[in-house]
Image (cartoon, rainbow, N blue to C red):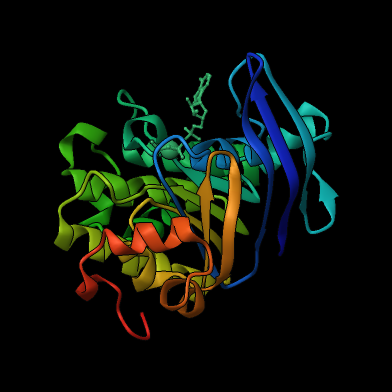
Length: 261
Ligand SMILES: Nc1ncnc2c1ncn2[C@@H]1O[C@H](COP(=O)(O)OP(=O)(O)OP(=O)(O)O)[C@@H](O)[C@H]1O
Ligand SMILES: [Mg+2]
């Protein structure tokens, strides 16, 4: 399913934080979104899900398989959020409830959105934890978020996001808090899930090195606008915007992998 963001503008308390963002996410493709801190990457993801802070004003268009999300009734949007479109938040603590077991968090989602019975939901939770490579998935279901390492928590957050078989996954800096080796694992996992499940993924990161390893398309934001977009190879090897060039110049060459995956 295709998610199209067209001319998306957001202002919060009178400040223009998005000034006309265009992005397209496609089935089975990872779209990398880079850009400096404060450029509007997180706000773009939150706008898609209708989760902007109070007092935000939004205009433009966000369509999922042709349906407009920006003007959708809250009830309907609620079904899409965590259903067809899921998000892994920048801070894994936001994605996971500290007082609920992992199993509960995954199954509640499925029972609410998919109407699955207790047993069925439980079996699927175990399967999902296996998919994100949590060892001993059966036992893991009974544990709380703080009983996992940072990398595992991040993968659990991905499992929670995948609980309702979304078509679109927005992953906001899913690896920032992790050390480099764990980071690579989570990214490979996202790439694999995208291929296997035909997910359309928006991978938000300010790290172009991370981007080069997994993204099919890359967009670069600056000051509330997408200043450059295109196939990863083109954007990273022949950036047309001076800002992208300066982002690339700040990276050691070795980080931009030829061919990527
Ligand atoms: N709750 C809020 N209320 C008002 N303005 C906000 C709020 N959250 C973010 N902003 C502003 O919106 C703009 C875009 O922020 P956003 O969080 O999307 O940046 P980002 O690209 O995700 O940055 P980072 O890489 O640091 O996560 C910034 O100018 C920020 O100050
Ligand atoms: Mg952010």
